[in-house]
Length: 329
Image (cartoon, rainbow, N blue to C red; front, side):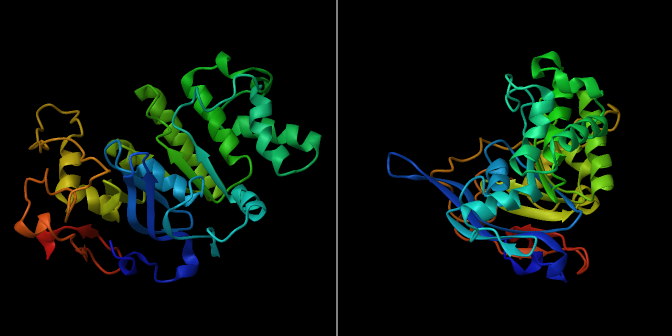
């Protein structure tokens, strides 16, 4: 998508702004994996943007690029008014106080050799926040914030369930009171009943701490619950971006329609047409020409095979609904 339609009316309202962000991973064979291809996106302060798409579409890579956990091949990243790509290592480390991540796997993301208190206190130690007594007090406060008892600080990760472990990961992520939290499929490894509890916790923390989330998921039902806007990714590109209600009420891109049609209906008497996509996600080493979705698209036009579609706004000026699709030329 082009960058201009994604700009806020007042850029000072933006917490995160990326322009033409690209990441190619070189292969030993001489080729490259086109993981992220020219993505532009602006996120307002206090806003939650859901990023959705099939596995392998580039969601997690894009989020890690925004935090500079992965170095981009090209493109610009501005965070809280500053150029994130130009920061030297020491300045970037200091800036990480404002950017944190919640990982997908609550088992692999916690060091089994460290107590829960040490895990949560580690960011405070690294950034020298307060003295020892103050840090211990903050650990207790953080545990209470995420719904765990104070004595959990003395225990180890293996003594907790998956949902409790994810609460520990959340406590660690908010310990430094960040401005932006990347939530990388934080509930996909949890049971459905636990998912709703963790999602509600994230919503509560957002309100209490004025957090902004980049929330990654392949589950559109989860994305709808927590997001203000939704970005749909396909093969390293954002193909549709809109306010959450507008996107679910009027999905514009054929790929978005297919994703929404796959959401299970709780009422078996209310059936809706299902869009079955042919084939699998294309190989990111050799992406299709033109619109990358055209080999699987049930509505593909002749030009889709050769020309990437320009971004079109099909919504009102104050609430843009952007779609990259030749159907709207």
